[in-house]
Amino acid sequence: MSVGAVSRTAFEISTKFDRAPLAYALSGIAAVVYVFITYTLVRGGETARKAALVCCAAELVGVLAVGTWTIVDPSAFPEATVWSGFGWGYVFIPVLLPVTGMLWLRGSRRS
Image (cartoon, rainbow, N blue to C red):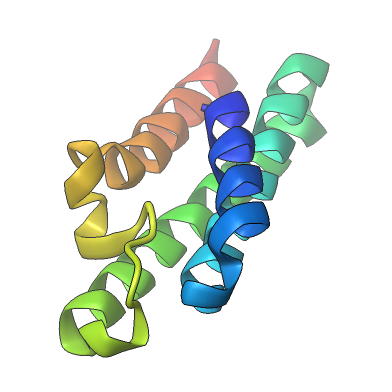
């Protein structure tokens, strides 16, 4: 997910940022969050697990906020983001991924 998010965002920002700066900036933020979560999971340890849990929760809040915003005021997003419609264009993976991550991270604490 991290490689895909960074690649997609780099392409969007470099080729069509002027068409929808808000949408592509949010995609960039999501890419940074995905990379950080990946880093913390690779690093391991309790502090890294907690940091990944916080990032997953922040990602979920972002998906819900932007998803709602895209439905309430679609004109704010002339180009779709990964979070548009709660990830409709991505089979809802953007909303399912942080939930799955949080469940896995909570379960890994008990192990």
